[in-house]
Length: 341
Ligand SMILES: NC(=O)c1ccc[n+]([C@@H]2O[C@H](COP(=O)([O-])OP(=O)(O)OC[C@H]3O[C@@H](n4cnc5c(N)ncnc54)[C@H](O)[C@@H]3O)[C@@H](O)[C@H]2O)c1
Image 1 (tube, protein in one colour):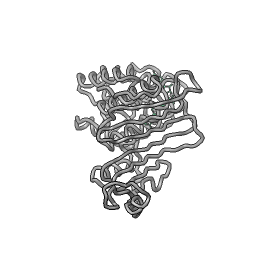
Image 2 (spheres, rainbow, N blue to C red; image 1 turned 60 degrees about the vertical axis):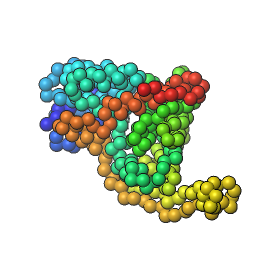
Image 3 (cartoon, rainbow, N blue to C red; image 1 turned 120 degrees about the vertical axis):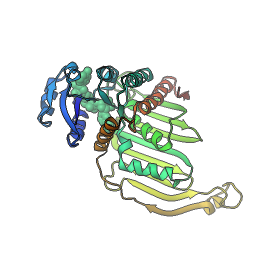
Image 4 (tube, rainbow, N blue to C red; image 1 turned 90 degrees about the vertical axis):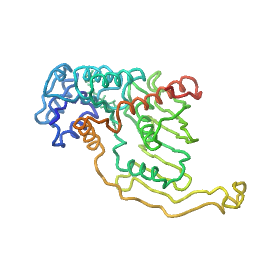
């Protein structure tokens, strides 16, 4: 039985308490938040868990084996670091921390302590993303040309990170998972209207090895809630609409074959028409499992087996490398910035 402490019980923390609460291998033993009123509200839904406003109470508790960090990003390094130093396994929410340096420090601490460090990139545990990854890996799309990703809504507005760190961190994780590596460079622009210096909307283009592009539109200042991913490949194209709960994924047997007109190039409307392929659209059945439960299960598996989880500290660090490059590019007026490794 793995004893869990959840730190941070705002919007997301209670969902994590629920995710571990349904797994017979785990018991949520401690709930920690600096806000006593929040603690009291959530405690009623987590039977058997003791509440505290002091992190130390959870870190000193021998019945707590693992600490789940769902506080604002700016606090991740301090809380996750203290938990690792106390010998606890850590699941820290995305983005992993506020800088590459902080992420590297957490990876080093976990390595030295011999403890599991996982980052809550929940889309890696989403059944539609898993199916999309299988399509990409088995070559159903052919060579991937580009991805287009939109994540917008009105709120929630963050005070410690911008819309890219908060929202595009999901899309970067999906793109990196599908492509098997992080981007080599990014260019991005963004605007801050609500809070000085914190971009409410970011438009970024990430360049991956092999001429693959990903365009990311992240905004919490937008009238429409959208969570859309398009993957355009040489042979097929794929869409993932996370707002569509029953049929999130579509595989389009569409494409343009260069050389369809016999010349190896598409240089006129006639050759374009002759080379276009409009086949079937497949809507695969995707299990409607709960990704967050899968994420919690993966964390418990990693602890039991002593194996790195899918979204381990290294993966979270790669996401933050790309986010830092996006921030540098925004500050530099959209200049293309290398993702430093
Ligand atoms: N994976 C996802 O889909 C997803 C969704 C939402 C949020 N998140 C992530 O979860 C984290 C929290 O987001 P949220 O929306 O729940 O934020 P929130 O502001 O709603 O809640 C944060 C909570 O942490 C508490 N807190 C702040 N500092 C603390 C400290 N030092 N010690 C203990 N408690 C502290 C606050 O009182 C608050 O209750 C962020 O990293 C965010 O990016 C992930």
